[in-house]
Length: 130
Image (cartoon, rainbow, N blue to C red; front, side, top):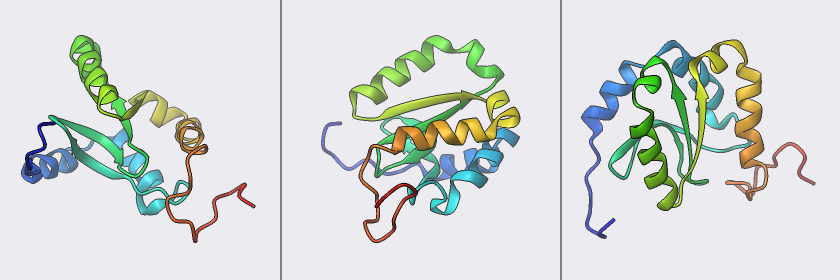
């Protein structure tokens, strides 16, 4: 970014949260309240010119859920992921079907991507920490 303050589009973020798909609601129940290793996730958060379905700022991790519309805009999503990656974010993508039929597997992949990072709150031990 150019270093200038960019106000958040909170109206758009709220609209997106209110229009959450069943898969987004299901995954949010697993991510909210620092349920994964103490990491804080937010829904429909601005990341540069884009909105991330789920963003963990501390880890610079974005989790995206792809439904039917993803099939229609793969080139857009590729450009978006490239911009996000070039700006320090890691992007994990799952399908809505993944979430609805294998939520444990989705959560495991998110946990795995966060496992090598230092805990966000040193006073809270993560599973496996000594």
